Amino acid sequence: MSEHYSAVDARLKLGANPKGRSLDLSTPDRSDADPKDPFLAALGERTRALRLRRGLTRKGLAKSADVSERHLANVEMGVGNASVQFLRQLAQALDCSLAELVGDETASSPEWLMIREILHGRSEPELVQARAALSSLFGTPANPATRRQRIALIGLRGAGKSTLGRLLAESWQVPFVELNRSIEAVAGCSLGEIHSLYGPAAYRRYEKRALEETIRRYPKAVIATPGGIVSDPATFSLLLAQCYTVWVRATPEEHMGRVLAQGDTRPMAGHAGNREAMNDLRRILESRAAFYAKADEVFETSGRTIEQSFASLQAQLEPVTRIGGAERIA
Image (cartoon, rainbow, N blue to C red):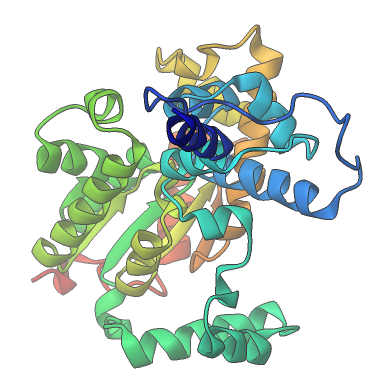
């Protein structure tokens, strides 16, 4: 009997009940933790950043991880003392390692520590050079001329990627690829079904496979990518290495207005009103901006008609791409 209770007690300490279902043991208040605890504050910042990078609302992450939304809010604010099991469920829902969620994974081995020391304090341009050198050493980057024959448009929904991409492809007489449709073809079901049946981790796997297949099939193409493609480092690195990328950008207000004008009410789902939805959109854009900025070009569509945007983007890309003009098409 005592051995049974000891085993149950040990499992409860890890955040699981005797039936195997996880328990939420995160502390809802700050009765036993320092409000300025730097570890909890950093944990909250990492959790929020990972959630926003993946385009998830707090409610959506809580549902996917099967945890309390209130306790998740406490963790993100740096005032929640979460259990190990709680963090494990968050990590699974966010498709990241527990080490990435709770701390610096580059402290996992001596080699990581030495590499980190070399890179510590380097400027952003120096880090770009380091990443390029590592990609050249271990990856398979495309020839620069070959890479410029495959244009990929990145950015949030509502920026105009699909519309401008189709126009560019038609003008340059090359295939247009809507990567969302390719993802559905690979998965054999709709995007909504992928998320509801298999979850975000499976979606990211299908997304990477769809991109790999697109790169293999189309040496020349214009590709409109999903807004969250920057969420997975491996997929985004592949895109940067094999395609000439353009961040198609707009103001948050124009992003929202264009999506709603298309009849898509998903940005409003689960929100009390337009203000909350707009705040979420701003936070998502802010969390992804540094990744979108890795693109080769930035193009602003705010305040422009489709015709104006197309003409300007075509003129901006013509000097640097290798697919403009019928005489260059194979």
